[in-house]
Image (tube, rainbow, N blue to C red; front, side, top):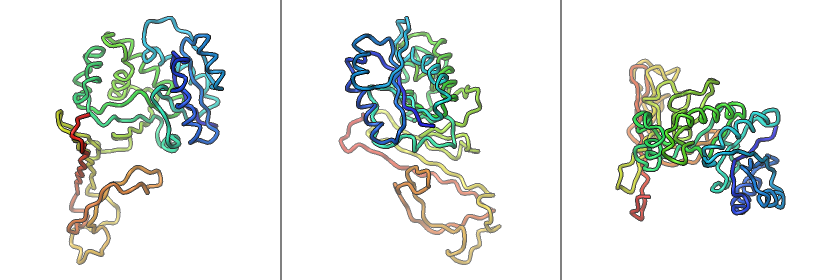
Length: 312
């Protein structure tokens, strides 16, 4: 089966250049995958623009005063359900502000059902997301304030699971106080934190813990930012528990540093499915032996700072 890139938009004729960037940049970095635009209430000129540029599309008609961001969830869920026989993996994105430099499906592997991207900031640290949550879903403000913001503009995974996920987002939107005209991202974050997906899907959070993590309090990635400063700390925590790894000595009594499970270096690498991602940072220290009588908790902090002094 081919993979699929899809998204929903209106005002197509006025934004055809943005749509072409979205489509053409994807096709430039992928091999024979499909692109289908879901056109929301397309006008005659919209359809002519799509056909002129050979953009595959499916038109939908909705009678609503809601924004496309809020109304796109159910039509997209239906579209995915209708195409489940033709595609396995799907990438669902915003259209006007998304372009591709590499094949995104190299990141959408078989070890998870849903892939979402973190924005590297907590809800309480980001005014726009906080405002939407307060105005649309005030009862969840406390639940989400210490959680990372996840972006609803790029979601990927198994086509059937993603269809059900979008329906759950829509269910949350039905409970909104309608205090803001864009509520789908807040609804998505509520779904994630309530773990409401009924399929039992395994999630892959880029920037957060996944379902394979047996101790998320001591194995995690956090971002810490103080308002008014021009830096953010990325804190990577990892635990080597008493019984990890197999085959270690009972006590830390190694006679020299050449014995197994004695180490004096740590580093962070970028993600790679082969485990050979680029080395980001590296430290060397006095040798330490991992043995059954000790656990080792590692907290590795990397500070990302703007040289210009700006806070954006």
